[in-house]
Image 1 (cartoon, rainbow, N blue to C red):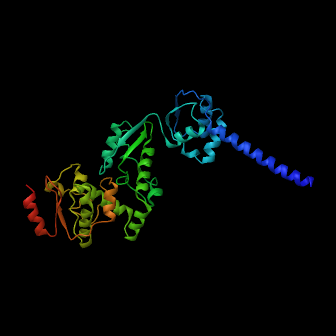
Image 2: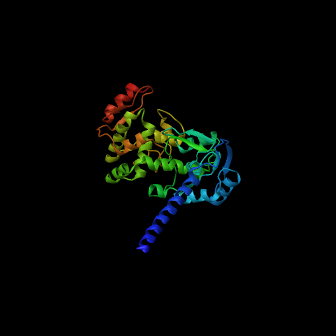
Image 3: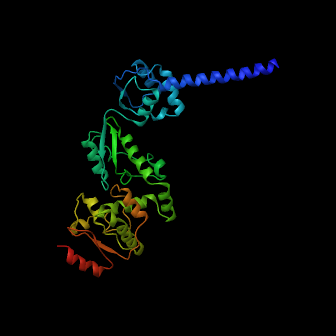
Length: 332
């Protein structure tokens, strides 16, 4: 009988010790060191270890003991996710808050950059240079070999097409690798499993879809035209007609003309879809989600031609005779 009570008492005591320990740990990571709001700049260098970061947090009076910061980060599995940058931290912040801020990269000096749909990698490079984030052509010359395979399951020889257009917040200390990762990760999130499955069902590849989507993006005057344009291009591919996309010519020449000159359409380049049948070697811009969906879900159409009047929406035609009549009517 005494043994039974002893055993019961031991279990109760053990539960009490565990509970008190859990409460103690919880308080260490959720209670701030001080309730006085006094922010200070804390810089995390690229490649700095968890141990060094924790130690400096304690030395600078932001956490009570570096051990608890390390404990929390390791428990959450965040050791490899601490981002370099310049942070505004305060001893009035709990370890939980500090860790989450550093993991999310919520720096005190973020630079916001908007990348429009249809921008080429050169245009993105220029915009990032103007924002003071990279050196000229640092993005253009970035080698994506192996870097993107984990995202797309196939090798990418060029970033063109896979830097998703969006508004981004970058730390002013961001390396080009971090910028590329943020933009390509966004691409991966936008291209959902359902979209990937549909591409697979159609026996197409992501690379083919993005290549066509990039052409559609730069040919369309508005979002409503995109599925129709995609349908026209698929019709031409099906019967072996050259795509004859002005957007591919502009990509080669660097011009932005509604109507490229005849001389431009004769430029010798594998991207020139006037001279070469089929899709070009790769994307000609970075398309948005609407263009990508248009390439996946094109509108069924019997149109084979289209043209861009200098003012007004795209004009479609079913055959060459109708196309020539439209050219006489809408083009100077």
